[in-house]
Length: 78
Image (cartoon, rainbow, N blue to C red; front, side):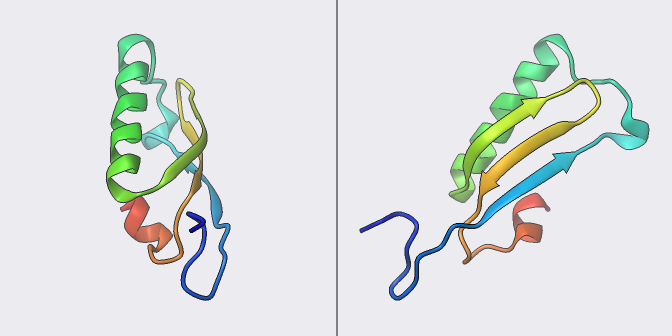
C-alpha cells in the first residue's frame, strides 16, 4: 500500500512553514543550529510527518513538510 493513500483516496499535502523568534533575533548559530535541527527531526518522526527540506537560518527556520490529512497543520505546529 502506498504511504500517501487512505482507503479511497491518495493525498499529497505539502506545507511550507516558517518559524521565527521574537523580533527576528539572530539566535540560531553554531551548536544551537544543530540542536534545533535534531529536535525538529525527532518531533516530526514522532508525529509521522516527513521533512522534505529544511533550513535553519540565524533568524528563522524554513521547513517543507508532508503532513497527512488526518492531522491539522495547527496541531502539528502547536
